[in-house]
Image 1: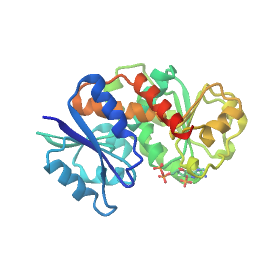
Image 2: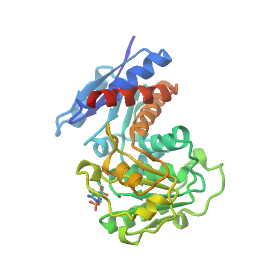
Image 3: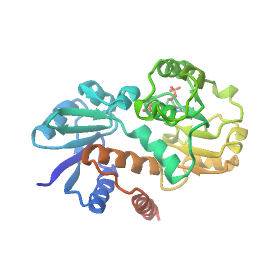
Image 4: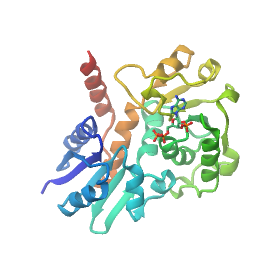
Length: 292
Ligand code: ATR
């Protein structure tokens, strides 16, 4: 019997997840069907429970329900716990399980597709909202030596540093290269005080929505090996354009992260990791064609 999955959100019509997961299914020979589920803003839990009770096997959760999914699900992975949000739900004999694959997706896209090992690097994360919180744990687990968080509202960056400084390292990676205590690896810094010296700059603000320019000095980008925008667009995002113009060696938007977080969800559900490179290429071409 074909197993059913979907992405639940509001809005959800624009979601690329069905296209990505259909490609994964074809590639791996998994018998699944993946659709879109529009939940009313006040009806997330009812929508999810109906899908599950009708035999659905799993959901991706997108805007604006990731926090509600986290609050609703009782059994969660450590990375969902760290993110404070759930983007993947699995329904099976053991009940409902909540996970978060966003941060793993970012790390994998940087390390595999872009070929930049994060261990020992200095990383700057711009933003301190949900998107930033979702990636901090996986970045620390990837062994970054220094993780700096900068936010327009500085108190929120300081709050994230405090929250993560006290957390236990992920057991899955704790056998790897020894790293300094978390408190020593994490710091908050205001935009105005940022100086060059980061290997990777990650944009986790929602500034791309308005196209606003971030108050980051050109020298910060010029000295970095990679500037990575967690958001994606058919053409350069405002952040990618800013980093490129400032002389950053390599820039990327977040399309690869989208594909990698989907692959990680697919693995959680099916126990098989699909190849992401061909799906990334296909999606990139699809995006370009839409605006040609
Ligand atoms: P998300 O879930 O996408 O992270 P969010 O929780 O609303 O959304 O967080 C948005 C983030 O983008 C915040 O860090 C926000 O900064 P504030 O905490 O100061 O609000 C940041 N942000 C949004 N627009 C921005 C802009 N124009 N310049 C700088 N930061 C911006």
